[in-house]
Structures are given as C-alpha cells and as structure tokens.
Image (cartoon, rainbow, N blue to C red; front, side, top):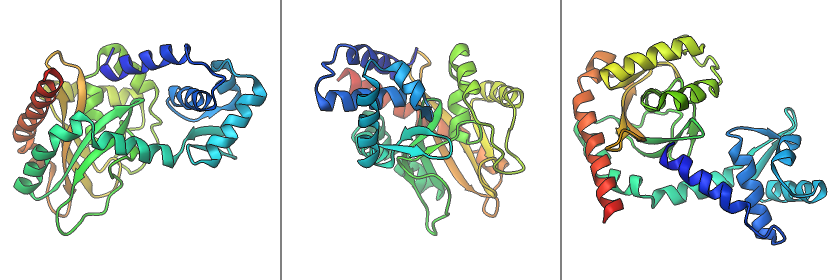
Length: 271
C-alpha cells in the first residue's frame, strides 16, 4: 500500500470516529465519501457509504455544491469534487514536501533544456500536476498545477503506473477511461499493459502525442528507496521543436534529477 493510500485509510478510519452532529464534521465526512470513489458518484452510492440520514445527506450535498466544493452533473446525475476544493488542494500541495524539495531541481532542468518541466503525482490513479516550469515562448497545453489529467495517455501518468505494485497497477488500469484524445491514444487495457512493461524495462516513458496533438514528452518516476512511487518528472515540448529520440537522450539526466528529489524528500522527512 502506498503512503497516500495509508493516509487515506487513516483518514477513513478516523472519520468513523467523528461526531457527525457537528456541521463541519458532516461536511468533511461527505467530501471524504465522494472523494473515496475516485470519480463521479451517484447519490445512492454516497448514501450507501455514509451513516447520515438521507435528508441530512441531501442537504449537505446541496450546501457543498453551493460552496463550490462539489459539482453536480445534471446529465449523469453524479457528484464530483469541485474546483474550489481542487484550488485548496493545490495550495496545500504548494507547501508540501515533494513540491518544496523539487523546486530547485525542476528550475535547473527547465534552464538546462529550455523546455516545459512537470512535477506530478497520482491521485485516485489519475495525474495531479503539482508544479510546472514553462519556456519562452510559452507552449499552450492542457497541464497546469492543481489540474487533474488522465494517467493512461500522459508521460508522467504512465511512468508512475508502470512502477506501481502489480495489484495497484491492475486496479489503476481498470479505472482508466481509455477515451481517444488523438490518433495515438492507447484505448485498451491490453495496449497499456504492454507499454507499461516496456517502461519498467527501460526506466522512462514517452507521451507520443497521446493526449494532445503535437505534444511529446519523456518522463521518469520519482521512487522512494523501497520503490514506492512518490511522483514523476517530465520534459515536454512539441513535435515542431524536438523528437522522441532527442527526448530519450535526456532520460539519464531526468533519472538523476528524480533520484535527487527522492533523496531530498527522504532527508526532509527524517529531519
């Protein structure tokens, strides 16, 4: 089980001990329940996972939606985490240890290569972008700190999925949407498994225009000494500027940078 999963498990256990007569405790409980599904959830699903009475739960969901902490999709009749909550989460990540210790490393990578550098982690088996450095002129792309992206068709996502324990990796694959974003997107679990096996062998991943046309990258995982996946780093550009072969040549430097971040994160945790 990963560190993030341990923390979520502890949070779920402690939430059962909360006095749910407190409005703020009920609010956090409902947010925890919705977040625990790892994707949009129906009212009936939330109700099954919560001890709150139906009327109370319905009222809490409406209030959280009104505050921007949840979003209710009328078409699918499902709740998902709101943008306000994501902004707050990003603010928390800005001061988190991985972002803090990685900052000088990604600054140096951006200056060395003159390309976009991403720092990311997994959240519910999707990519959460933690930090980003952009060159001049700026290349417009999907990613931005605090934004959630797909794991199966991004370099950082695949780099992290490849190094998960077998059981977690299979669960992650099962949770991918496999939506086709470009002609290069992997659209089946079998195709993704084959690519992840290759990534484990060579130690780095590519995004070969799989999420956005013309956008390519090379990515490596950030691994704790025991092999747990802490996050991922990538160098990203466009097909107009570079090629996958050129990006592959950067992989050794990127691996060294990832090792430096993992070491710094461990020293901070111990210190």
